[in-house]
Length: 269
Image (cartoon, rainbow, N blue to C red; front, top):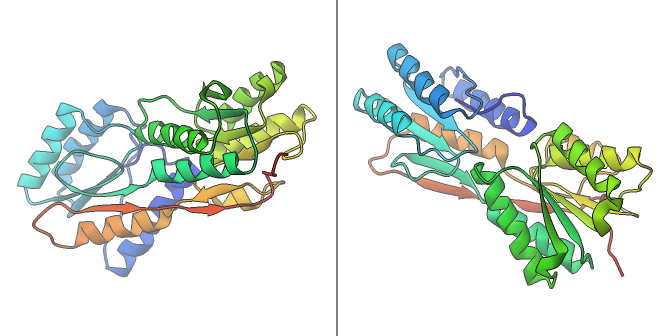
């Protein structure tokens, strides 16, 4: 189960799952729930009747719905294995990305390169990964000497169009004096760069832009995007290994990112 199969990052996770399952002689079927809790619980209920060997849930949201928890518990009692890719307090195997640490390293980098007025483009706090990245950005910027009053948080849809529209609004305000835009994922960053280019602004000469994830397009756009490479494919591989393995106690695995500095940022005096 996945939130939205159309996102590049989710595509990388699912593709890795399918490759790993194939090597083990297993078959992967994917269902999209669009992060709606009622659809998540209903999907598990339907899948229970098909008796799959294991169930992997990937979600950027808080998995705290009571109906979902009951369906998962029933599935496990029937002999199924549950693995969650994302943050959870549920007692199942889980693989999570260090979203806060990735964003903190980017915030620190942007501060260290002299940027002192920053806009963060991010999703709503109901999205756990976006909340962690937003908090990480702020922590890294503040540790690097950026004043709290000079950090602006702008909520938007976490896709290319959301980044484009948010950046276009910033341009209408004269970019609000920002020297850098920190986007909560690469798709938002790429949308923002497109809006700046349309407005005649140059990245990074006029404004630096960064992302998180390191999707394939990040190194193909012009300028190439500075980002934090998260081990998305590895999370998919580990999820299948957990699902097909055997363990008595829930396992927790946290995967860390890696800074990738490219052309969309430059140092400020």
